[in-house]
Image 1: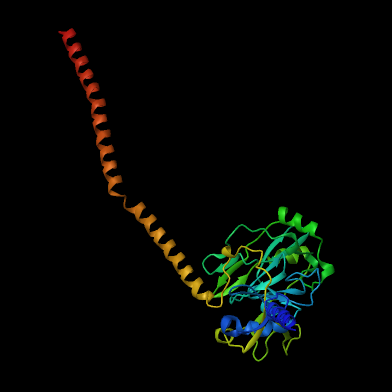
Image 2 (image 1 turned 90 degrees about the vertical axis):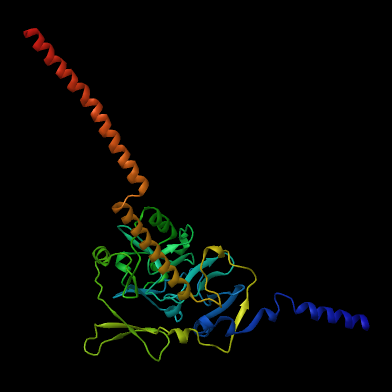
Amino acid sequence: MKRLIFLLSIFSFASLFSPNSSASLNAVPSDAGLQFGFFYSSLASHGEWIEVESGIRVWRPNKISHLWRPYLVGRWAWTDDGWYWMSSEPFGWITYHYGRWYDDEYYGWVWIPDDVWAPAWVEWRYDDEYIGWAPLPPYATFTPTWGIRFTTHWTAPLRYWNIIRYHQFGSVIRYRNTAPEKYAGHLIHTGRSCAQYGVDHERILNTGVDRAIIERRGNIRFTRKDVQELQGYAGERITKSLNDQRDEHIEVYRPSREEMQSKTEHIKIRRGERNLSIDINRIEIPHSDSHIPQVQEPQSQRYRQEMRRELIQRHERKQKPSPHTSREHTRQQLERRKENSRITQPRTSVHEGQSENRRDRRN
């Protein structure tokens, strides 16, 4: 009897540390991640949050097809901010305008949060027949000074790309509209890229492929849609003007800084079985104790100061040569004067001698 009790106690103690036990799914207080508390609560019903490393949390959507990719189910709209991705998915108003996507070897597609809003975070390729876009990875960071920059060499894999013909660009895109992966390989190697992002009065612009090119090759027309702030509803939608039903507006809810950092009582965050297959040292993942604008703004200011200092130094070097350069220039001038004097002096003596000889012969 004592042996049986002892074995049962050992089994119960070991089950507490089993990776498949319910202990791996914890109700983690939001104190560990106040920065994205609003995102935690808004996306919890559409997927699961996973803590893959200490302080690094990603979100994975549920109920998706094995053919699913980010920026696939929806449509493109032309706005004052450039190309805007209007998603048909309930989580798209967050995950396609904030953060980055990564296709992990173990977890599949995961979304890494960020607090910078844009009409879409994608890169573009196009040729004479096809146009394609792929989600930006966590290696891609944005600063107002430099735009998009990659912290390491990156080429989006073929499975990242959504490629369609031009005439389908203005319609709702579905799985059957996308071209096979072999077209993605051809487009990556032979297609053209384009300017992607800019800043206009503190607004991020997704310029992408020139609208005139798409309209001409697809024989379609885009009307500019206004992007308006949506109040009282967490999401995005297209509304029509009361005066003109053809006049459409995009209404999107963008949480304020205080709302984004709002505290949620308890959010279930699963402990990941392993880390991501990405180089963590090469990406700027926001941790629970960090705040992206406080990191990016000093960097951009430092870049501007360094550029300004370098331009000033270049100007000063052009306008005012260094003392060493001035001394060298003076020495070279003196040497040239001495050389000229040595060259001209013999010539003068020869002419004088010839004139004296001629006078002697006459006499």
